[in-house]
Image 1 (cartoon, rainbow, N blue to C red):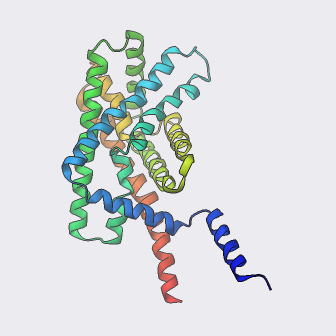
Image 2 (cartoon, rainbow, N blue to C red; image 1 turned 90 degrees about the horizontal axis):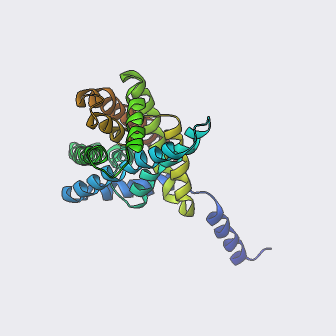
Image 3 (cartoon, rainbow, N blue to C red; image 1 turned 135 degrees about the vertical axis):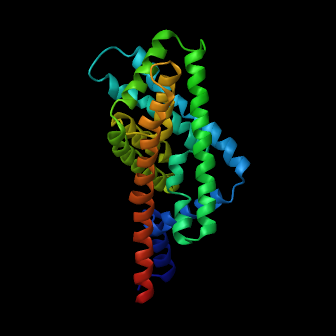
Length: 275
């Protein structure tokens, strides 16, 4: 008969080599969500403002690549690699980005659907969304009204804003669902990605960028830049992009990732309790 100690060691090694289960990932994100809900409002404010400013580097990096790459059919495929830059800064820097919060604080709310928890989620969402947009607004003003970037680069940023605003309310909302879905999936994958975290962020946000999916903060930097340059009104930027993108991101993140993954985990628990 095989040695019991050897069997135990083999079992432990197999467990370590296997991918974490959905329940393990769920518990990791649930703990992170509970931690975020406990953060004071002042900490959320400054972290959210930092994230709004940092997301401007998605527009800046992509716009500069567009500016300097030669005119060719493949140029958008390369330029959209720049779209990932802002997300890398925000996520690796642990700054508060609104679309990440369509998953992490929602799991504690689904676990304990109380008015107190709902108010706390509303507090977190309100502060983070507001400060993200303030950061995006401030950066757009600096980009347009300073001499940091040359005229050709500014023209590339304005062109990006026109493309973001062009589809109309309904299409922006639908594209926002896909963006919210992918960003929430990225958050779901990150806890156990380990050294692959950077590649998970790059690949999934690259798809958001190359697919022209509407991310409420990254895209708002672009349309705010368009408005700051006087090429559209602030009302058109907010009503034509920010609002539908926000609604789409919430629908994509909350319903397609948070609710579905909560359902699969809790359904498994219920079946286990009945047996």
